[in-house]
Length: 312
Image (cartoon, rainbow, N blue to C red; front, side):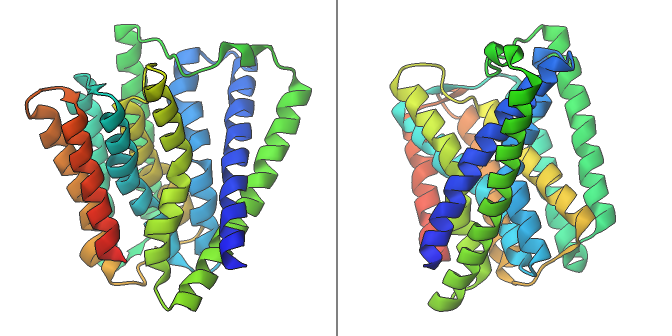
């Protein structure tokens, strides 16, 4: 029954996330927010909603290990699983923004998270505020640089500008309800599985939950790559990792402080997250430079398989 709860919870999170993204974009158009700003802020916040609800639900339910490892595991899966498989299907071009802004900011947030947790074994309310302020500064710099270079955002669906307030409200309601019940079922199911199998909640969250919340991005990337369309960009995945740390853990910590309850979070799990981030930079500069080819994709994917094997 617990596995059933987890599956239904994941389905509801995917459905709820999709409705929330579409309604958020529609409402943003109504408020005359530019397409570029919608793509870089509204969409990013909305797509992080499933992770946010899972972490918040877990923290409120007294399962901080799930709250932390949901984000740590999702960040590892974004690089090792999603990026690895996508690169295996077809090479991914890497822009200069990767090493000029996106990667350094992702690494900075990752190191700051490690310091906050290592310092006193808890992510406090003040530290959550610091993460959110850092995210706001990053978004300001990102939007300003995008305006200078006149970057267009292709991911935002223009047709959503035409939907009415009634449909926006219904979509928001469906998205909110689905996310709430999806996170509730997923967290409770994961806790039961951990108890029944005699393993920690942290292990369940960094494997099962993290893979589950990465499935939508993986599916979108694989479909785009198979069709020969522009695959999910490296910038989107790096941005997702930044949002996971800054907005998901930042907001959760502000509402309820997150203590480190399982030693392996600081002794093992977070180092895998930092390791995948560091290796990604090396792969981008190895021949062939600024291209993630199939060989590099295989390397990332095998690294992720090794990580799952060692954790389990």
